[in-house]
Length: 309
Ligand code: CP
Image: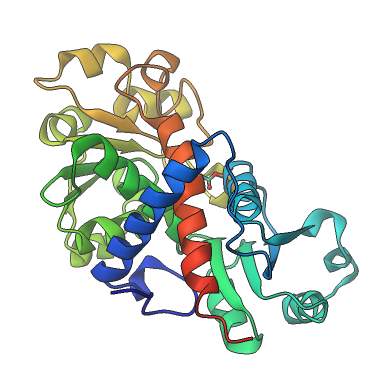
């Protein structure tokens, strides 16, 4: 396969296994590029990309911007907080005004699930979903799988545990789709109130005992509790959540094997993971961030090659 089967990256749900293989092969090349003294290639000199962030972000926004600049694309950045959205402008009007400035590709983060899908149907540009509410965060799942592949050789057959707030997590859903597509075994662990009832229909098993779940896995992906998406309390107190579902060094050292620890960030140190675990050799959290640039370069490069101009 030499090109993606899709014209937009809206979710992992829409990808084939061959798409992921192609993205990873392309990311391998770009990872070598960004470790050179001159970290830039001229590939996208004729492409303009708009990064539209309607929700807060540190890693994803900076990672996309760096990936675009490493590919020599022209980049414009939009943040809802300082825009005319505050004056009542609609999403389509905002995007069409930006496209009128001759933009080829839009990277969008939005609090509403389906925002990227909606844009792909109504505007004339290639759309990349950088996180849409509780729905999907496809580039996060791609960089997570890429990091597992880098650390353990392959994703197929690996036992991956996702711990925490599964219900509100776009990272969890995209990771489940990506990991299953590549032949990994996936288990989720967290308070019953934060595990959606449909989860087993995605081919995922559930374990509410953290120690048992950790004993099973090769990789543990520790998620942040998404307090900003909760209108009610899903567990009694943060202290009790940490006691039951937090990963600390004592637990990590008590396991019968050395597991890989991941976190998509931002970390709530001392809640879902203690600092000594987050900063340990077993944690690949900063490798995930570094790989994010190469993976996003690959996604942008492959989608740009499908744009008809
Ligand atoms: N992992 C992630 O999406 O982080 P940001 O919210 O900082 O982009």
